[in-house]
Length: 437
Image (cartoon, rainbow, N blue to C red; front, side, top):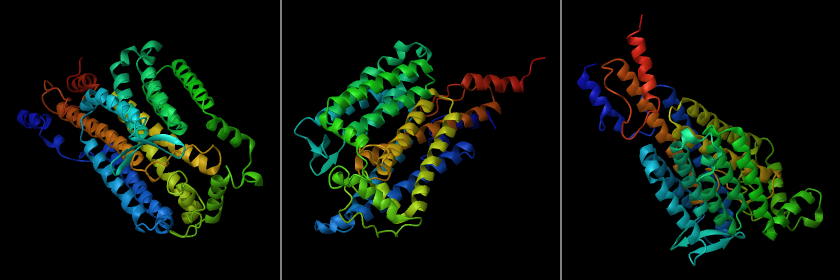
């Protein structure tokens, strides 16, 4: 390869600038990216189908289009998938530069909930109504904090062995976001935000004793925020004191949703009653297409269907961990680590609620439950991970090209990418080509 040909590879506008969702170069990164996109695509498609099935009866009863669920969730899915594709083409350098602006925008949306634009649903005031569109700013804030926290921890990486630099400004900013959110009564989102931040800190390789301190403060904060709201105290007390399966007295009250969720799962058996044949969705199970959609999956697709869904989430988590082990930049590792903890914990909390292992918290099943803001935010998160994969693949390709040509040409910094270990990798390459005697 000539020097001119190599320069053509390294300059923007070359093959690295092509609009690709997954890396063009064959290798582990491309394989992992394809698996990630495939799993997410299957979950999104399943979500559209199950939202349609779970909400069709209610739509017909209300005189709406029988296909309203599929049209609504499908529209959100198209917007989210488009956002994922576009996000995958954004450079991580631009993400870091825009992180503070995104944070300001996220806080603005959260505050607007307490203006006339906001409204209450399900006992929580955490929704915005702008014309015909509604949105949940707390879901968008998950994505915003993921980008912002990864940016801050990357910038302060040399200082993170000292607890002061771990706490400032991450803990105060996150605490403020949580406080604004908890005023509206949404404890479930608060728990997911805490898990997301903890994931970012863990994959930033923060000392365990500092992590333990942050976790202790977070648990204490959640406890205090729970105790200041009487309805939360009542829910927790009810969860620990009442057995919904045996206490007939509460069957028509606080246990109604959980009981119908149990019955839906048990009715499904091993292979389910068939797609579209659920009985629980006939206005027996509240929130059938959102918080309790896993129960409808269990009823219609059976144990086989629920295990298949769990396997998809497991594959997604394993792929993200494999990507983290291959990333050479701190930003990519922290962002992907926070993303996989966010999605995994949210999935586990949702399923734990349906199975009766946690009180009803109003946490959607990622990619599957009805809800536009949640779906779009998680797809944007996957797009950010794919952007990190694309840049990592470009770095690997650049270092490989540099090792076979003029070593004076430095790889990296292609379309905003930054290969953290460029100098070390090039030094190894030079040592292999020009060994000392």
